[in-house]
Structures are given as structure tokens and as C-alpha cells.
Image (cartoon, rainbow, N blue to C red; front, side):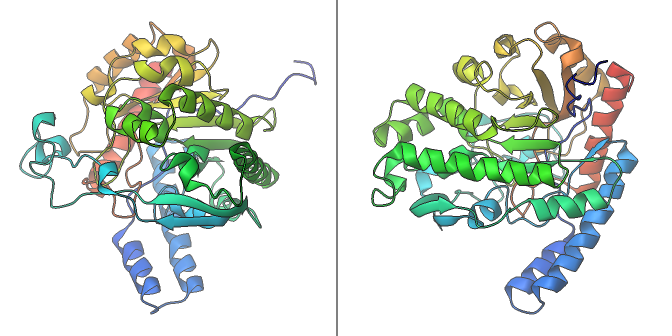
Length: 398
């Protein structure tokens, strides 16, 4: 190989999406901090210990890529957005509520059927409904300092394996409200807003690269909102055409990642929402596949394929040759452990559309996109992660 050949980008046959169930001690410490009973420094020491322990557990499972479980975060996106100037986080509205899981869907104690009762979405929902908060831009969007690089540095210090950082998608800053959620005083031209979003993300990615990070994952459930008639109606109500806005989001994301280094891998996780085992969108990727799978200039996709909500593999035909796909076949929403033979069969099915050498396997989403976590035990979480590694070793002889 000549010295001018591009460096190999990180890609792992056994991957994971990012969030892990917070240990009870960490949840308790966060509550103490919020109540003013312990300092920020004390909380961070507890977080450090919890992260160090979860990295060891991931290594023991056999993962070559590790995450910090998002243990320092309230949820997958809020902490990052709170690090920006010019934005305000507000309460969402009921029309944006997640579909609450049924007992059967989550495999709650006493019921381990792998069934999803979509005719009774709110039948046995554990008394819980999740409405995501919204972002409103009040002034010029800036970031005074890197937001995630310090957390990456600690994570990398705990392991000799590859440390991955997750970033919330830039679409999170715009979807709910569209133009109306962006100050006309600060941004008379909406394109100037998008240009500042790009500046923020390019600076964040550059800071991560400077810290040594070579695997960055963007989490984007907003793209699947364009599958949902309910969420498409929100776009129309804001005065936009869904297809036009979707294309703008693809272009925005591509602009945000365009300046990454040649040895930095960017993966994008396109899911359907994840909080306390609930979700917001249902249906296959077909409706957005040409624009998203065929249009995003990422190195690989991490896609949900854990149950009938996800549809079939046919949309994978839109993935450009050489772009890799991580199949999210192992659900994080309920505790029943998948059968190895079923996972092997599904990998084989997907390989008819994407070359086996360009495939990998992971859980379908995180285990705790919000601090409360999904309705699943830590024991089941680790069994599922070990299953991901087992299948990867079987298929790819890693």
C-alpha cells in the first residue's frame, strides 16, 4: 500500500447504538445533584466510575468499540443542545407524544410473547407517556467551546479499544416548528440559520478529531418522522412540503459532515424514536429510502430492523455500493432474547441486497435514550449485547 492510500475508517461487525441503562447508583447521584445535595464535581466522579465499569463490561462482551452509555446525559440530545448559545428548550405538545408500549410489546414480567398489539397502542402502557421537548432558536446559534470532546477524552482514557461519540442530529434544531421555531429577528433568511448549524457541527467534529476521535455517530429519529402521516402533518401545518424539507435535511446533514478527515468514520443511526420502550414512527424505510439511504454521504447507516414496525429489507437497495449498513436486529425495547438462528437468517436475507462484507449487526437502538431507560433489566441488556457479539463472530469470523 502506498503512503498516499487513505487510512481505513473504523467499522465494526458488532456495534452498538450508544445509550445504556444507567446504574441505580448513578440515577440516585443525579437526583442528589439536582436537589443540591452533592456538587457537580462529586457527580462527575460517580459518573467516571460508572463509565469505567460499563466499559469493562463492554470489553468482556467482546466489543471492539465502546461507548460511555451516555451516562452524563439527561437524554440523547438535550445536553448537547443546552451547550449551544441562542437556543431555548421548551415543552412539547401532546400531538408529538410517543406511542406507549404494551406489556406484550415490552416482554414485561409474566408475559414474554414477541407480539405487538398496534390496535391497542395505549392498552397497557405502564401509566407513562413521553412527549419530547422542542428547540426554539432565539438568537444567533453558536458554541463557545467543544461540547462532547471532554467526555470523549475521558472515555478513551478508560480503554485501548475504539471509543465512539454520539451527536444528536442537526435536524433536531428545526423539525418541531420549522421556520416558526427560528427567530426572524436573528435569522431573517432561514438559510443563514442553516449555515450557522453547519458551522457548529463542523467545529464540534473538528474538536473531536483533534482529541483523537475517529468514530462519530449522528443519531437521527427525525428522518423517520417523514414516514409517519401524523408527523408529516406537522410539517405541512408549518407551511412546508414534506419531501422538500426532507431533502433540505439531507443536504444539511451532508454539509455538517463534509469537512471530516479522511480517516474519520461517520455513521448515522436512523431510528423511529426510543423512550421507555415507546416510539413515535412506524413503517418501513421505503418512503424515505431514496432520499435518505441514497442521499446521505455517510460511511455507514445504523438501521432499525427489530420487528414489524421496521418493514422489510427492500429499501436497502438504495444504499450506494461501498456504503456499509449496521443491521439493528436485536431489540432494546423488551427483554426476550433473540434466537441466534433467527438473527443469522435475517443477516443472510439482508446480504441479498447489501454485500455481506458491508454488513454488521447491533441492537436496534439505545437501551436508555432518556435517563429513565427502556423497560428492560440490566441483565437482559448485557445478554443482548453478548448476543450481538456472538452473531458477529459467527457470521464474519471476527
